[in-house]
Length: 107
Image (cartoon, rainbow, N blue to C red):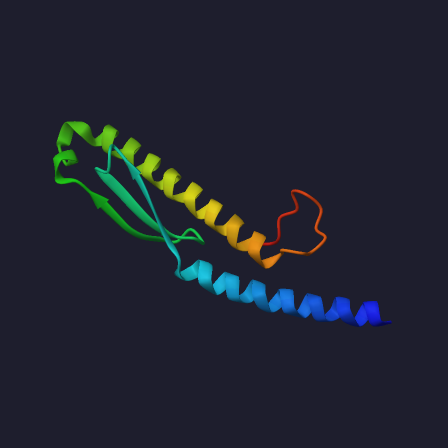
């Protein structure tokens, strides 16, 4: 019975830590870049876009396709950074728990 009570306390503590981590991920921001910084996108670690900055030199009528590609690339860069940040935070939250390798918690 002691093990069950200890497990329940551990689960409650983890739930609290996960809620804190979720809130922190909504505040943390990452920046993705492309074109040597000509296009920059800022996302929260949860994936919400906060800003898009485009260097004025890219705002030419005949370079629309290039600009589109740079925006997509910058967004992908920011998304990958956000994903890595989320994984780090979850590793901190679940440290010491006997979770199977590769198991992802619902985020």
